[in-house]
Image 1: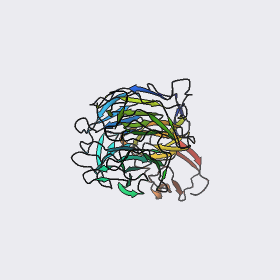
Image 2 (image 1 turned 60 degrees about the vertical axis):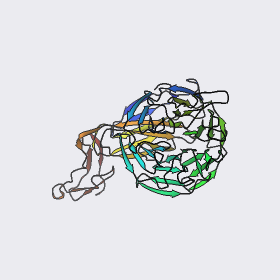
Image 3 (image 1 turned 90 degrees about the horizontal axis):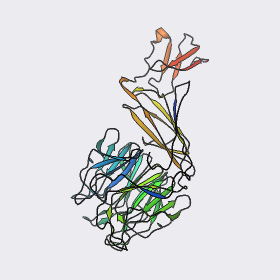
Image 4 (image 1 turned 90 degrees about the vertical axis):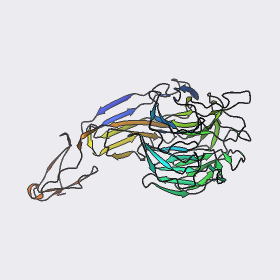
Length: 474
């Protein structure tokens, strides 16, 4: 990886029992290897400069699309952190728009709401593996633009925003359930009706702040926390910078970041380039290194592992003179936090570790932290998957201090074989019954009278994976 804040060593160990492959990422000490609290420019977004775009990350890939370039756009692009390269993907399925919301849940990305010849209410899912868009249930609230969104676990959230056609400014807040494709209204945002704010999540808490209150109302420094478990909003310390709208927000570990935007008393006010870090543990804001890409608003931001990214936006004039004035931008910048945003050792393993059949259960485990977030949307250290095609799984591991690390593992799938479970023995011939079949890793063997004392288990490739004596009839 280029310009990364960590170096990694990969070690593969095959165990004698079960052929388990361990992929271990060792993150080396940070302080001597690179400068911290710094920005590095990456490969520019290859399409037309724009603003009011959407962005999110899935695993080690970032995604940017839609937006305003003088006309509204629906193109959609993927950035690879490992190679620092952009690849155009399938156009956004909902058509052209700006001011939409984007977030990811597991291995899927989501875009909804926004504006183009009317305020949008539709909601679309992007499948990273197939590069296809699928329409999901419409957003539960009124169509809008300039809303905020984030995800927690397998749930996505959209709230606030504006609809000037009906002269409405919103403080409603909605939850989308990935498994049921159902929207449910939650407690209203505590900061009252707001648009053009920021949103991100840390653990099982969501955060929303800044923005403009109502029709050309006052700019805000409000910053609020939403507790998923209790559906309660709590006001936290006001954002450390000036009140503003059109800012960016992202999170790394247990820290949140807000910056850029415009902080004037009207839409023709000054732009900003300051960046502020919020510590979830202390509820304190600290100013960090200024964003070097210049004054801008309505940019897009996302995070991958221990780095944050800002791209696109509308250049603004500064108090000291014109800098990118009224210019739609396409640069991409990577932020590396200081040592307080640390990394952890993440390990991920699978059983079986070799090629599997279509639909075969694979048991994947991670260790190294206290919480785990998989690109499938699952939480917890262990998951069971049954891939139909060769699939890469990744997990973000977070420790008690909020430090994070990412582990990935690819499960190769043989499309020429299908997992159907063990063929059931004929009871009157073998005097044995096996259930449940297929199983998810645990099954029972009933001895119907033959008298079994030794059990050898083989996988579908003829490898012995277990041997033991049966001491009980079942």
